[in-house]
Length: 264
Image (tube, rainbow, N blue to C red; front, side, top):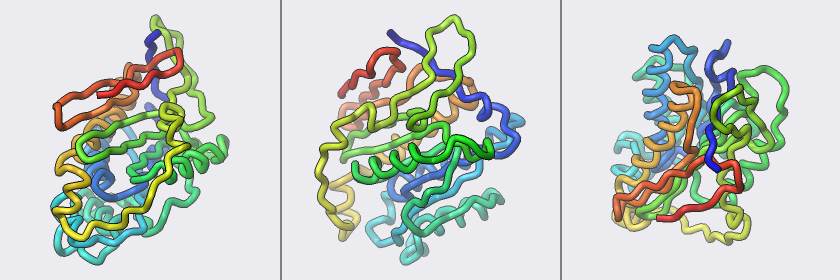
């Protein structure tokens, strides 16, 4: 049975900027950051308090990153998070934060992961799950958006923060307080054994692993879900599967029953 999910009430009318932790500033994360800046400008234009982003990545910019990721030759040798956030802050006049390190246990309303491995996703889920549910409302965990891809395919999954239920209003529709996150939706992630492939030695090698526009396409779909939470106050879908080879997009419908996986 299909259902809808209504946005957490605090996010719609917050007393402070909604906090966002963006983990991973590579091919997808670099695109997501720009989308978040556009989202923030739109929210402020609608009278909302907007968002405050903290970006995390321990890696420095290398030559293979130029072109596929949003870096220029002038960024080579700089930390990815610092280079991107500095650019956004100068362009829009923000005070968003950059952390040149792996993600630490800092709480936020929304977590967005753009990482390469299942192991990092599992570790991140545990960090979010253990974060306190009390304290200041602008640091209470609400949602976790995960974006992942292969060379020409990928998926976007928006879940509620592990262990969190969002109070739903009276509605003519069936509603759900909890959206399955990427680990609940794909429990086989716990069984994946991944090898560290190391950095690509050239842009050509990098493009053999991830096609040129797969990251930006997924970033648009992912941040659009966040936009719908704010703008429409409800969502009927909480993710999608994208295939650039066949030009197919399959939505992940919110389901009251155990979520079923669809494939392209």
